[in-house]
Length: 474
View 1 (tube, rainbow, N blue to C red):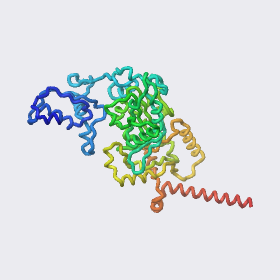
View 2 (view 1 turned 135 degrees about the horizontal axis):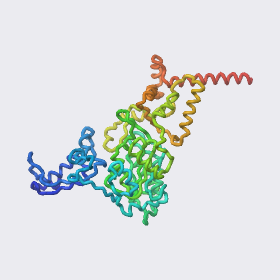
View 3 (view 1 turned 180 degrees about the vertical axis):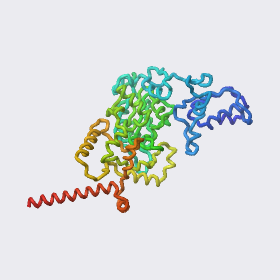
View 4 (view 1 turned 90 degrees about the horizontal axis):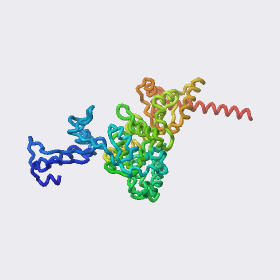
């Protein structure tokens, strides 16, 4: 705008370069184009000159603060043009007359570059970094030497503070602090690691605050910690990513998602900030539901770059298997109604849409306990009971299921699984227990009433047994 205010004549510039155009909205990109038109733009005028728009459409685009305008303003001109001819990618690639693709990467170690290159850049990137990208190849704590990538599996709990819409994971905070303490002052590539060479990425502001607080408690201050958006365009020798998530969510159309982390562009930006060492801390049982994260974890497994429980991705229990094993007698009760959208602020722009009433409602939902609920109170045959017990023993004996996520989406296309869903009932809170029981008398009892009734009968039988035993002893 400053250049435009100089009131230059039209065609003053012959060439215009717009860098990082992938992060600019279309109106922001149009502003510098005015410098080639002068201050008197006519309706039928056209730009006489050459415009070069440079950027990466595979990374995060412009930030839009309006949900109504987001479909238009959240897409850059660069990304829009590359979806149309003559800039569109064809079977033979891009037209070299209009698109130049930079394929030499001087930032990342080849092991770090491999997955984003495969998922986003058609395998065309070539790692051309110097010795600085290999300085951590022989770090003492690497699971595999000369492979500076680590996935640290952790079975943490996703938590939040009262009235806070953001989330944090204390288990991941502790692990990250331990990594930082091991790195600072260590010798990598012939020089000592400084705080400024380490960056910590996390998608949630509350997790960022907890990490900063934990680092300062250990005497580590001013270490760069921020969100993926803040780190876009930056680079660090060492990047540590905290994924935070330990809960699955169901989006529109019943599709499972892992919240903020489901954005492929965010994944691409996060893993390509590291030059020499990349450490990812997260829950594999949650991340395996996203294509990009599953590919990354499989890559780490194949190269033995894994710490924590060995959750083999090809042996993860599917939702269909969980439904079949649990449908006879039990189902998993979520912490809140699975059909309700629990608001989680995932960036600064959505905080304004989270009012006090929503906070109160979500706080009440979180008080609903998680646990096993028995589906029917009928007595089962010994054969059926034994079969159910064998199924559950098989489930619990598997190493990869020593931790149960707090939410399972049991919705499947399989008709048998849908029948199981119809049998689920929401866990009633003590406050509404009397009203629910009154309504159940006319329309049949809920599952909880059956459980209480069965428990009452067992207690009565136990009292009779104890009474007869005491009489015989007397």
